[in-house]
Image: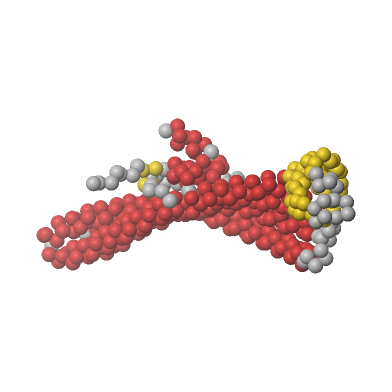
Length: 413
């Protein structure tokens, strides 16, 4: 039975599906939810705790009490009063960790969309190069027909037929190779999206969503998931230092208890007592607190170094991509003029060949130059779009396409 054909979808449609359904996004969302739950559990340690405890045992006969078994339950409400700030620091650290996992989810989405856009751009490039190649094949077929007609009454031009036939086969082979590359790019898109999809259309342009200047682009670096993650990791490691700094200080809890007692006659009175007490828990000097503090300080130092390196690397990448975008945008006009000039030159040489003033080698050379210029222009257009997508991915703003005017226009269609 034939498989149901897959409906073609645009980049924005597939990007929305990836954001909602991709396993990596769902996994990151689950981790973020786990982080929020863990932070909520940590905050509970700062609130009053209600507990039920019981002493169960057997007492031997003493001077004031009978021997026998006993069961003494107790209801206790306790509130942490002091522990050197360890619990508060741990709560803050786990809350920052939850925020890091939220930003990590944003970064996963950006990475997926950037990778998808790269594969999509290559697929779109190969599709346009196939169109250029097919036009070249059609032009060579026209020349082949022409030289065949000439060779029918001028047998000395038979070698022209062989030469054009060879160039024609080379052009057809090049188109076949590009079709293979297009199919590989399509398979890559499906692998990245983890969906059985059929791509359609080109990558949508960012338009006004792009920063107008490099200064504006650099101003967005602080808002990127990479920068935010680096800052959160610094804050998290600093909170770990705060939690380990006062390792030697005791923990003091204020407790209010409803107690039970066993009388001298061996009777048990449940919950007939009431008590208020401070309970101090000392920390053993050999608990490794100093080593824990040293480890936390080293981790904090490493986090600051990593954050500085990440910010600098991101700034360098943004500057490089901005330069590439400007250079490629400036080359488009020049390449468009080259294509126009190559078309005019080829048409002139073609007419000269028909009247015998040019050789077949001249015509084939100009024909090749004509389509090489077209292929170069097509590749340059796609390279420009690819550089823009890489720039927006570096700035963590590639997902703005999903909420921008381009998405609204496509939804209206």
